[in-house]
Length: 304
Image 1 (cartoon, helix red, strand yellow):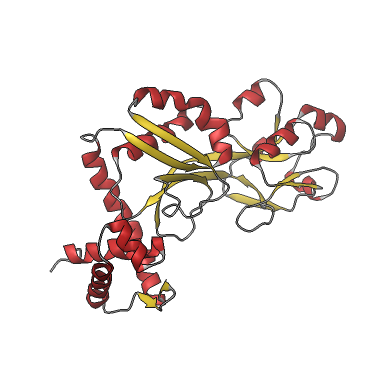
Image 2: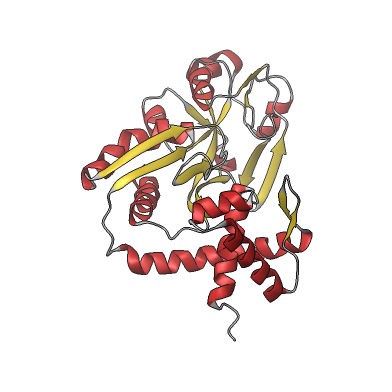
């Protein structure tokens, strides 16, 4: 018997649905199966693997340590398999229906929104709903087809597909530099001689650490600043107003740099990159509409 037989793949699919929905009943509803069918599929998977993958009580379902280890190892492989089979079949599918996207607010505002018309004109039978949210949330439970988020992926039942990287620059307005001078090295941001605009990370509730990369060198600094914000748009507006130095994505900065509204600092320490990932449910074959949207978003970085 081959390692990836049909029963094993079915069991992994059901397992992912249980993890997504946090219950056997929820998995049954999503997969259009009976709850007993879900239970049998999980039992067959456990027998095939020789381990127990879930701890089950009347109130909760959670992965065992062995189940978590298997899950973390197999899901990237399943995601790659979905990518390959989806690519082979994608061209034959019609792009239509409704696409619901959970999107990073900053990416939606600076990059996606101004350029979305091109995609919509190319696919007139597709309806798109964009929801700007601070975090990934419950993608399946909230009814989204996919999510677009900056940052490295966290452990999840979702497939994470990297679309591109964008560099991170330290930026300041000319008015700020006239008042406080121009720092020549990132370490000067720790001395209190400069004001930095800190951004609170939604998951941890703490300000993002500041890193500066120069080829293989990595420098971590503790910037000094009295202003901490939680909205990406506010980081831009306060930086533009000259209230402090901010770390901003290169993506979407061309207009501000060209018009001299913002000035890049430390160009020799500008090799740090931040990824944009697309997330989608691991148990789903990627629909043509989702794949087309992936390709469109991935192409946007080349237009900056």
